[in-house]
Amino acid sequence: MTKSSTEKNGLKKGPWTPEEDQKLIDYIQKHGHGKWRTLPKNAGLRRCGKSCRLRWANYLRPDIKRGRFSFEEEEAIIQLHSVLGNKWSTIAANLPGRTDNEIKNYWNTHIKKKLFKMGIDPVTHAPRLDVLQLASILNTSLFNSSPQFNYPSGRSVINPSQLLSLLSTLLSCQTRNNVNPDNVFNHSNFHQNDNQLLQNQPQSSQMQLHDTLQTFQPNQVSLQENLISKSNPLNMELHQLMKSKLENQTSPIPTSFSHQNTLPNLWHCNNGDNISDLSVAQSSSAMQCFSSPKFNTIFNSLLENQNLCNNEGVPNFNLSSLLSSTTSSSSPSALNSSSSTTFVNGTTEDERDTYGSNMLMYNISNGLNDSGLL
DNA sequence: AAATCTCTCAACCGCCGCTGT
DNA sequence: GACAGCGGCGGTTGAGAGATT
Image 1 (cartoon, chains in turn blue, red, yellow):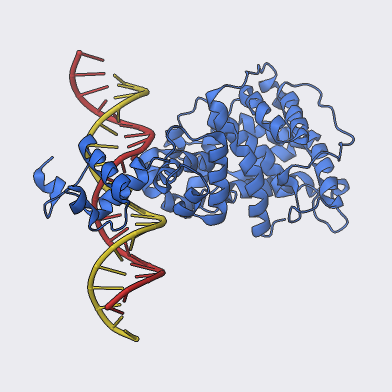
Image 2 (cartoon, rainbow, N blue to C red):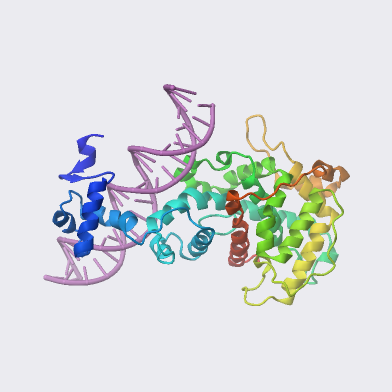
């Protein structure tokens, strides 16, 4: 590194040395940090005040917590970000020992990618447009022709968020899988082009969906178990249902649910304060829907649809055609592909990666409320 | 073992808002 | 009200560590 790149106006730039750190610590311990502008001169440092302030605030402060973010911290960051946006300093104020810079870095390098892969727009915390679109089409395709599942008003009893519950599982499984995340979400590309990526949903979303479906492996489903059971007993029932589908077992169709259980947030159709009768009815009906042969057909088609790109690697996945083909035929062999599924145990470290579906539930319901879909 | 690639995070930059004059 | 100085914030960069080929 040349002198000109490290020094400007006689002020040093770049990484701090241990000696500089010690000078700064000694000075602040003695005099406090009143005037950052005059501090470096008084402390014998050839740094600008700004640099000193940042070094102290982000690294030398005695109350800084080091090490990996905990599950609770991650959860808090996502929750706070969904409310506050990129107000890193405000978020940091709610996380003792963590700096805004640290949180910002962690968000950009970990959480943002994770949310995106799960089908959540990390900027708005709403479901990504492509996922909503799929849910909507699935919903229409599944239930518009089934009057018994419709309310008198004509509204389908299974709403997009319920279908998203299924999709979130698919997406979460995908993130746990052996797929190279960079296929979906190349780090450097995302880093530089994430805004563009998010703005160009129709193009990128097809790729996302393509990758998700192409790389999904049913034997990852049980990885959800810990999370789902922790999240909610009712979710566990749904999970078991999906699992048994994949094992080609006869799914026990629940006739009723223990309504004393808290319903998943995802299925809250109101503001979340009270669980309406409608919500309860929807939840039970949704379980019936997931057990329907029609659902089986579509679900397995999604899993089986492996050839979604043409020779040039351009996705040719077309939701409408997929659904029209799946709803018009109900091949019994659809289930066979997963009949030999073996389930693996949840892992240790990577369990962290599954928590997101909790967040998905929380945020999707909000997002759908916001978008007027619920 | 070396070269290359990927990822992380400390540090910088520029802008903004607040405060004092 | 206009201006200057300062601190704080969020976006971005790039060095270096680690992973992969």
